[in-house]
Length: 180
Image (cartoon, rainbow, N blue to C red; front, side, top):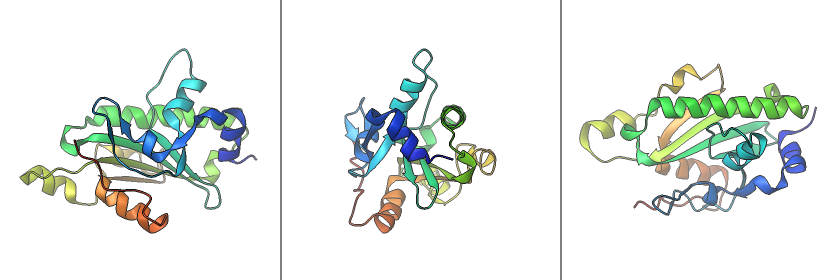
């Protein structure tokens, strides 16, 4: 069986970009992180694989071949309370359909990989909503996708992911969010 990152690079070498660029919110011209870590621009890969019909997709795939782990990352430059559950759920489903299709067509055993969905949003600072989303629980109805589509689902603010990635990828590869 082939390795996922190798096959993507072999078939679509132009879909690699920095985590920073995949975190870009073009509407507000804001980057949610500053990392130059190379990732798969999953939006671009999805467009390449599905040129006639563009399904929704996560922003980036961070593939760790040595650990057989794929982080499926979606950046939302919104407060958690304004993110529509149905939109995130559709992204999760469409993204996995695209990833499974790519793997099937390229002899990649996706079941050999641990898949972790990461939904990164702007933290909110107002009362009830802040307390509701501050806890480290799965939001956006994605708990139904844990153990079905993904091995793990993590939904949290950019500050949480910044700290986690700083631990895993030192030195400081992610910076504080550039809030509008």
